[in-house]
Length: 203
Image (cartoon, rainbow, N blue to C red; front, side):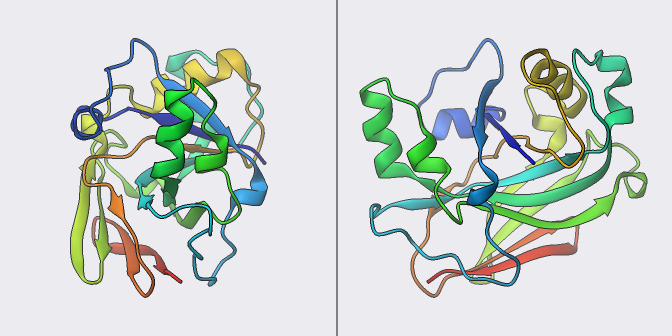
């Protein structure tokens, strides 16, 4: 399984981090070793003092595909999920300043939360899905897939130009505004509409 992540896919998030709006999707990959095991807490790594939560809609690939045309992309997934791309923001800033890759800031052990999955058929339109992240009972991130710069099927088309997508691969589709730091004993709970898909305690 590979985890393909999309950066800068919501305008408000681009603006809050003072990044430039990209001409094409920003793509990076996380290893499967970054996935946080189910029912385990997230431990803040000792190499960062500023780890941020980034909640994202996920899709799970259900067949092998390469150079997938956008009009056929809907056939390559039947489950929608929710997850967190934990980011060591201080380390990421240092890497970006030097023009270096981000993997150390985003792909460390435990940095990838994959919540429960929902059948795609439960949604009238995958381009109109509401999702939220609560921290200690308060909503800190709120998004809807209609605000993506590149919609799900466009992302599948784009990513499959470069990487063969295989069964079980997961695509993180980008985070909305509201990212922020976590601290020990925080509790993060993610929802699609009103359905809870994960709950994570920070240590």
